[in-house]
Image (cartoon, rainbow, N blue to C red; front, side):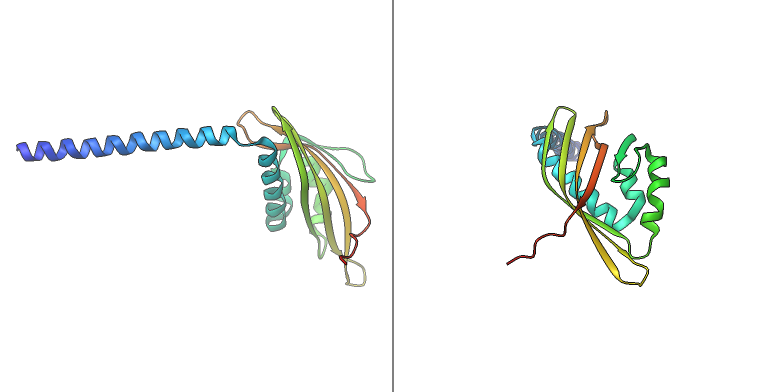
Length: 167
């Protein structure tokens, strides 16, 4: 019976040490995340936003916006809120050959606000069935939500000429 108690005590000590290490490891990860440069976090978030939208379309686009997020689309009125965005963007995302990709160039963040800006490319199929591309630039203003997640507060984009060919 004494050997059984010793084994149980030893097992309990190992479990306690593992739990303590796990807790400290979680604490260290939280500290490391808190120390992470918020501008780098926004760059990563914007890249994930692009990737998610390229894979999951309109639903992904909308999911990155705050509930009361605002879009300032070129040549159109102001679009406020996720449902208004869905109505406004659905015809574009459903158009044959439509794809939207972008790449952030830089980011800045301070406190619970930040921005990213970059370049974009949209494609669609024209009336003749040919794939056509349009290029743009954008600024996205991000707001950190109460849960610590960055969401788009305001997004604006406009047209640009095609990029210069590389020499």
